[in-house]
Amino acid sequence: MKSEIIQRYIHGDTLIIVSSLHGICEEIAKNQDITQNSSYLSLGIAAAFTAALAAEQKEDETYLTACFKWTKTGKSIAVTAFGDGRMCACIESFAPEADTDSTVLEVTRHSDVGGEYRSVVIGKNVQGAINAYISESMQRNAKWKTIRDGRKTTGIFVQELPGGADLRKTWDDIKPFFKVLDENELINAGCEFLGERELKFGCHCSRRSAQRILETIPPSERAALGKTAEIICKFCGKKYEIQNE
Ligand SMILES: [Zn+2]
Image (cartoon, rainbow, N blue to C red; front, side, top):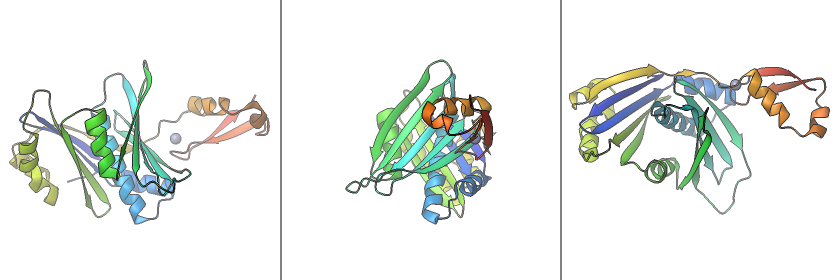
């Protein structure tokens, strides 16, 4: 199937969301200096899952961020996705915890009216953290699978609608799709195509958000920045020159 796309299908009482990414991950990898294959793999899973979550955003939500943290290596990948299909990501390091080896998943939903809502779950690995998020935070009867095809990542989120009871049957029916990644396999399995949306690399930063970042810096440190402070967005690398008064 093509990439940079999110598709929705229905199969009985089950909703299926398919996200497929390639170019966006390449762009993020370039911006964030990802060279290791294992990091690129993690990025693909994180981005595909975040895209699927964003496709089911509540109406008043503007965007959501899913941050995966690996306690042993001290690496994190935060992916932000908007309801309109824009996505970006940021890779950071933190102090690793020597005696733990788990994956923490923090999902933050941003809304213009309600502010931020954050939930945190822990799993043994990325798939475990996603499973924990689905069962503990979303409290849905749902399944997630990631399939890698070269540098392309395809994610499938299958969830029972309220009152539904055929998740297992749907999962078994759509299995051929996992092997060939051809949308026709979903149609052959009895899925009805509901619609699709293009995904694209795009950041949420603005002159206003850069201004706000500057305002959070303690006055003593701000004074050292000079008359014009340069704020660089960690997601997309865009530079903002902000008056420092
Ligand atoms: Zn940016």
